[in-house]
Image 1 (cartoon, rainbow, N blue to C red):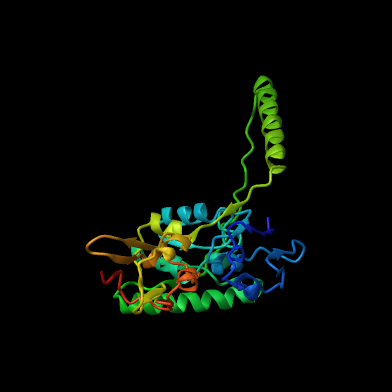
Image 2 (cartoon, rainbow, N blue to C red; image 1 turned 30 degrees about the horizontal axis):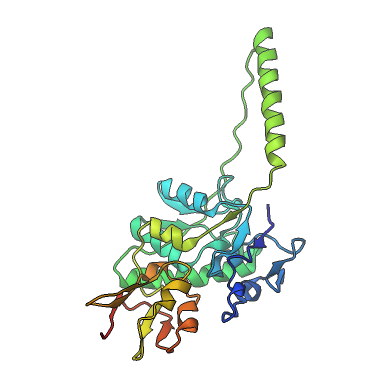
Length: 283
């Protein structure tokens, strides 16, 4: 359940100008080196997924489905598998952008009460991300994220029931067939790539100061190379009489490929989105 891998077809290492080692730098187990994961060292915390700007981390967990289940809860609570059997394996995949998107729609609670003793690096990361998100939520006049402790539900004892002989053998046959199916499914290794930008677009998340911004200096020739290299479509060039560069802050992952590839050095990625989505270009 813990193993991770890196899709080198998506990793920024494929780009000659990018030199990204975010997953390696954040991994508390030192399980990542040279864009490869040492499976025996990985503990499945998910921090590499949180910081990867290219959605290149393959994991055995479907984080998009986990967030979908969270959004269906009333109240909306994010918790790990130690708090609830239905919770995600570990909450390390979360970042401030995902928390913002969830918390701006409905009040959000987060259970990280077990993280400090279980995975200290995840606890420190989540504290940092929650604090940044709560500051932005407060400035926007929205309800901040509540930190809670969810008590695990006690197991429910099964009541014995009488079964007729024919019903008994029918039930035995079905349970055996289901058991064989479960064993067969367990042999199939599933992996998922969580694309946070695609998820945010689907949720129609609004960019705020927690997202990256773009700055355009003089010298842009409207060559359009930035739109070609952007992996998420966050930069779009509109040509014609009213030429402009359009920027979707909620889609930007901060990979910086647009700025790295700009022949004129006219683009700059800035750490905080200030609201500018359109950059008019001179004829």
